Image (cartoon, one colour):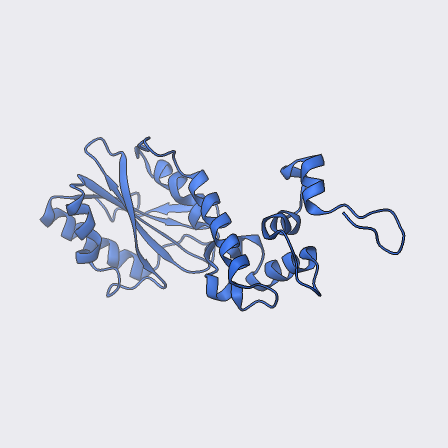
Length: 226
């Protein structure tokens, strides 16, 4: 807390957090608490605003690499790592606690499992969920990051870890950064290839879920799986 020109002291982000609780703070204030300090010439509030502006708002932090963060004036390696760690903690909190297996009984279950992690990402992420005989999640893998392409999302890569984990079935999920989950022709082609490969290997491809911003499309419901 500090005074400005002899006026009433200005309350800092940590003081506001202590007095009002985290729910009352703006995004830039919470970010300021995480970063703790600014630079010699830039106060922490202004630095937090600069970060949010550079990455496109709070959702932009979800897939902002450390290299991108350190390119922002005033953000060194230490602060970039603090931010990356805070974002990853948030990701892990929204997942099912360790030791509990999330059951996938419908497309809605699968979408709920990944929605908060995928909906704001600026690049396409293709995930496979590995399921046991009761269709509970026993593991997951990020297969590719970037535009979905059949040469990148290859059945060999999709099923390699699933076989190693003795998965009974898999469920594929990827996001559309545009927020519109409408499947593309490439999505449909990749889904057909994976379902065919799964039948040969004896590992069911239960569904392929395309996630948008709070919405999703099940390719199984459209007749492309099963």
